[in-house]
Length: 472
Ligand code: SAM
Image (cartoon, rainbow, N blue to C red; front, side, top):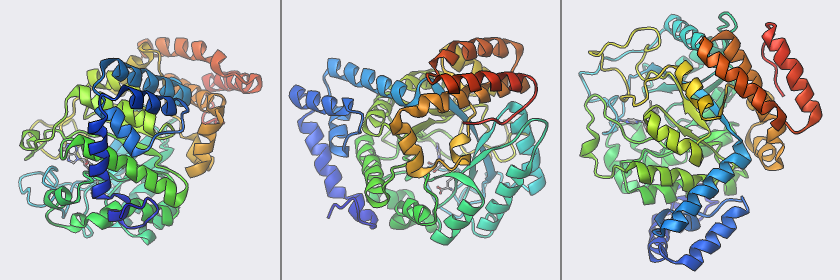
């Protein structure tokens, strides 16, 4: 029985409710009056239910689809301005005991090179990441209680935060590791993690069980209820995602929004982020073997509809996507992207060897961070290395209320401009620095509060003189 407040996976992700929502969406995909009414509701910027959002996703009226895109773009501007937060993944270990059929780390893959970074190797990777200019990481690891126990992850987090190389520092470590216990989430929280991210892969239970035939991850309920346990362990920024390509995208979309509704109903705060990974080629993995791949057009529409349905949730796109696709979805709602990424264990220090197959997936965007930063600014975005909210304790509903108050322009924009200034001073190429200084100057007037604007101007000057790490 569908119940968003329930703590049971099969009740808050109710299969029949998804099927009913999809049938409803299908029946109304050209229903102009209903689509107009849903768009009207969406303009209030309070989000949409999974059912209403499913109608928009199914909509086959061309003019209404253009309205959906325009509204997504407007909502994005209202809540996130022109800022794009940057991060990089850091792969700690590809040892894994699971049998996920789409992932090259699966335990039966005997020809992939297995690696696990030592603390010294982590130090070297982090220095390389700091030297690129990164301040925010997403830790990635396979699930292996012997090779990658939680103690290893905790020690690695401590190592990462302790490294201060030149002006560099990793100021926020997000974590993407397998579902675990409330007690372990509590320990991750105590280690100072930012967001706990876990992708559902698919919300379709029967498919989930086929795609995860062996290992601890095969337990659908344990995996689906992981974010609840993370919340119970005190982590109030959690990230959702599905791996598009595994199941029918409309099913996943409804499931994803139901999961967001569940977190809101059960804990009073929705997901901090939603990621939209698409299945990529990798060692031993051919995406062609999965029937549910989606086109770039559908991908863009999913991003737009998520943006409208959950306006306060950040949206992440990785280097699984090409420059062209990233450019398209940035306009429609993406607020965070990775840059200069390596998906192999040790990939930031070692030049990636074409013979080395330890990467988790093939990258579609192989540009350096400097190139990504310049490209964003050439499109008038403000690349942001900000980590202020979490360090100021603005997590969970406190972050959401900042978002809702409209004060984000006087807080997030100055923070973005100050961290961009740090980046330009310490890491940018001359060409990027030149564009960057122009972008900073052009954006200062958009800080509407005169006092915040004045403080910003003073701090930018101090950063030019060598001071670091200011924040609002
Ligand atoms: N092991 C952790 C878990 O069980 O959730 C998460 C870490 S895994 C390194 C991160 C994510 O990469 C997975 O959740 C999955 O969605 C994604 N992934 C796996 N294989 C992929 C592929 N072939 N193409 C794109 N993404 C993939």
